[in-house]
Each structure stands twice: as structure tokens, then as C-alpha cells.
Amino acid sequence: MQKLLGVIFKIVQMTASFFDRTINGHRLGAPEYLGDPYPEYERLLARGSMIRTYVVGGWSVLGFDAVSAVLTDPRISSDLMKNPTIRRMYRMSSGGDSRILKNPLMLSMDPPEHSRLRKLARGGFLHKFVQSLEPKIRRLTNQCLDRVESQKQIDLISVLARPLPAMLISDLIGVEVSDRDRFRTLAEVFLQNVTVIEFSALEKADKAMGEMLDFMENIVEGKRNNLGDDLISLLITADTDGEKLSSREVTRMCVLLMAAGYETTTRLIGNAVYLLLQNPDQLQDLRSDPKLIPQAVEEVLRFEPPVQTTTRTATEDMEILGGHIRKHQTIILVIAAANRDPTANDNPQEFNIHREKINHIAFGHGIHLCLGAELARLETRIALEVLLERYPIIRLDTGTPKWEQSYLMRGLDELPLRIS
Ligand code: HEM
Image: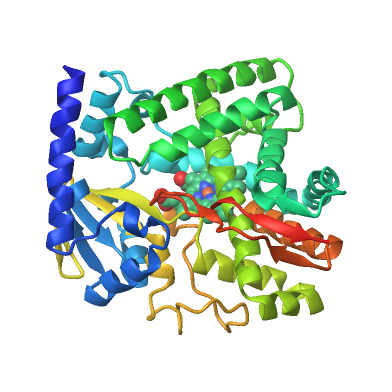
């Protein structure tokens, strides 16, 4: 039965995708533009801020002001349960028992539930705490590079961009070294499959979510009797006006932090190094004046945002910027297109770390604004500082860097470098 539904679903998707191609909708995730989605975004944006996307039965929003407006509109929800199409897809792909639907993460919640959880989680990301991590991040960065001390050729992604955020977030949460690779793989499988509009991919994402929850539940239970100065202990003891997180909520929060905090930062570090190597004059400017590094990180976030899209659902019929959105329709917010909207940044297709003002929404906007933004910025700044300090010469090695094939995330799977 599930197989038959899968086939029917595939036919519906193919028909919708045909509509997107022929009547010029957003060809979401079409393989021919995943390698470089920006010409497609520029073409769509020239037609308007909002474009139909039949493959999700809804809309894509591409303009900077439009994306910002949708992200702050209380009639538009982050809750997956309010989207019958998504709900049905998850249910069917998991045989009716979706761990993703049963375990909503803060990211897919609306107020007042979201506000309560966010208030409790915020304590783990206070400015003073995040900044106190600088020596640890520098030490971890050097450790990663010490391992390849004698090598002249490295893959930056496997040597630094992947292990650094994984080590840091596992360390903060309190995941044992021996368990880190397992969790890292599960988080990767989850993120790679969760937005693929296909039964088998959603099944894999759901399974990975189940395993992450089981895995984290054991760690949280262990911590309850052995509180320390890690993030889990902080979440267990967090208290606002007598309100505390339940064990299940702490577990889900840790899964969210591991999933949201690891691959995103990997992508940012990789994208930053790649863009600077593509623009050697600007790399030289950073070597001459490392104080420019934070600004360069902002331009990387604008130009190649690791999170390219996010999704919402309309909770009522409404009119936004000339688009008639109907209740329950899916809305894809294309952060990557918005960051290159000419109304937000002059010469948006140019990578320029010297821009006077850099407007971007790479960390989202509104109530779900990324909790880990300061941490991700800090890790990337330190990674760049240490790389420039240690290697007077860094070049792209031969071969074409491999971009991840996803419309959710954008980053390099491999970045071969020559260093000395
Ligand atoms: C370059 C790195 C990162 C990028 C580009 C990024 C991007 C984003 C974006 C776009 C959102 C909002 C999504 C939406 O509104 O649907 C978000 C939310 C979130 N991010 Fe990040 N993120 C990064 C790193 C991190 C890190 C390091 C952590 C934590 C360790 C983290 C934790 C979160 C959490 C908890 C939320 C949900 C906030 C809420 O629902 O209120 N992120 N992130």
C-alpha cells in the first residue's frame, strides 16, 4: 500500500514539477541549477518577489522585504502540523508513525509554546558565555590543523570545517568523544533528506530523527544525576518564573542544537575560504588587516548563505505583495535570493568584503532568528584568523570543488587546498 502511495505521490510531483518548468514557476531543487542557483534566483526575482511553486503546492518568496515581511507575519506559521501536505507526506513516508511530527523542535513551533522554550534556551547563548569560548575554539582549530602539520595538500572540509563545529557543539552539549561521529552522521542524514520531496528520503530523515532522539535521551537522563557546566545541565536547570523544561523538551532542544549548529557552520567556514580564494585581492586585504575578518564573514553570509531556504505555512487566506496565498499553502522563503536582491544591496552579484553596509538575513529574521548566530560568527572568524596566521600561502588545488546538492543548504562537500 505504502509503495503504491509512493508511486502516486511521485506522479503528482512530476506533474507539478512539469508545471513549474513550463509556466515558469520556481523549479525548486532542479538538479540543473543546484550547482549554481543564483542565475535562476536572479531571473525569478526580476519577475517579482513571489512566484508560484507547484511542486510544494504553494509559493516561493524571493525579495528581501517580502521574505522579512513573511517571517514576521503572525498569520504565517512554522508549525508542520498546520500544513496538511507536509503532514500527509511525513505520515505516509513513516507508515503513520512519524518521529518528526511527534517531536516538534522549537524551530517548527509558534507562540506561545515557541516563546516559552526560546526564553529557557536563550540562557545557553548569552553574549558573555559565547565570547568566553574563544580560547577553546582557537585551541580546537589549532588541534585540527596540527593533525595535518606535515601535509602540503589538505581537504579543508574534512580537516577543519567539519570537525571544528562538531567538536565544539558536542563538547558544549556533553556528548562523549566516542559518540560524536555517530551523532554527526545522523545529523547529516537528517539534513540531507528532510527537504527532499520523496518518500524514501523522508523515511530516512524520520529514521535519523528517531535515532537522534533515542541517543540524546540517554545522554540527558545520565546528566540529570551528574550535572556539570555543559549546555545540557544548563537547559535542565534553566528556570524562568518557575517554568522548567521537561526531560523530553531538553532532549529535543539538544537534537535541534546538534542538527542546527553543526553542518551550518561547516558550510560557512568552507564557503568563506572558497570565496576568499576566488577573490585573492580581498584575501590579501584580510592578511594586511585581520580586523576586517568579521566584516568578511558577514559578506560571505550574504553572498553564499549556508541555509538557503526555510519553509512556512499560511494559516488563513491572505494577500501579500500581490500574491493570493490560500490557507494551508506552503511558503518557501528563499534567503539566498533575498540576500542578492538589488533593493537590499547594491551590485548584489559581486562579492565585496568592503561594502559599506551588508544587508542579509542568513540567520533568519523575526522570532526564530538563529540562536547560535554569535557562536557561528565566532567559530568562522577564529578559523579564518588561524588559517591566515599559520599559512602564508593558501591556494585552491586542482579539481572542481563539489557543492552539496540541496535547496536547503549550500556548501562545499570537499575543498582541496595547497598550503605552505
Ligand atoms: C552559519 C551558521 C548558521 C546559520 C547560517 C544558521 C541559520 C539559521 C536560520 C536561517 C534560522 C532560522 C530558520 C527559520 O526561521 O526557519 C536558524 C535558527 C536556529 N539556529 Fe541557526 N544557523 C547557524 C548556526 C547555528 C548554531 C551554531 C546554532 C547552535 C549551536 C544554531 C541554533 C539555531 C536554533 C536553536 C534555531 C531556532 C531558533 C528558534 O526557533 O527560535 N544555529 N538558524
